[in-house]
Length: 371
Image (tube, rainbow, N blue to C red; front, side, top):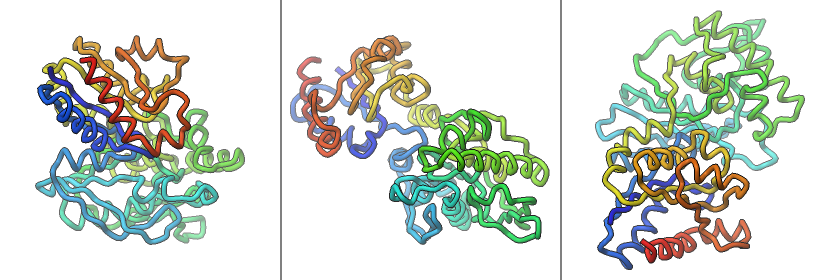
């Protein structure tokens, strides 16, 4: 019997690596004859740095940077073993997790810290930047990131403006840095929204970052203005491309300022881990994340795993903190053979998060008794 563990992180409770470690410990103690294959997964959001660092077996270095409100912080950069590729995870400098609820204001927040991390990695001679952009607190179109790399955004008087959502409408020209360093940027994201408009960064994601209806309108207008400047001053027409609106528009900004390639974070991880090849060798796959619902089947990692398992004829268990019972039939049709919440029914959400490790071990015991 071979079981493949392939979870995403359980937000605010278990990382994908912790999930696999705890389940494996129970399996070794109770069913040592079962072979466990461990592939912790991510999709470009929180936890991706940890997963890719595990995959690369490289190093993580802490450097000076800035948080979404430009306050000094220390943040990580991950390096591949050969140090030719650096991984920068947006949430570590520009994520919502760094702000108190009353600090969320996308007119003020910035991706400056992302640019500072990229600049630090380039000083170390890397040839490729892997940029993970989920969980942002920003709607600045990546203008803060560009500022950190030497781009200047000028107003009508020729005065440089800091890169942030509230300054986008005042920008009239972009001045690139004099020296360009040859490097490749790959952006991991599973968001396909355009930069602006009804499905754009401000309208769809602005409210969760603290934007009022008035702010959303201002931010959307600012992103439209920024897109015009990208085309006029940088020769990049990217606002309508899928993913341009990811993470407050840094998807588009990465394409405009860095000539980046946007790829599906989940697909990239699955390919790098040789997931399908390993899936073909197992009898059961177990995946999951904090919540399984209708969006699970719209490009999220557990949905991708379930679909691949279905195609390979391998049963797939979906473990979760909570799931949407209204979409249970859809989840089962999408490749899951069963959905199993970690915590007993009726457990308070706070307790489910706090005791997630214990509940996972109990769930592992139940599963291992059945297989």
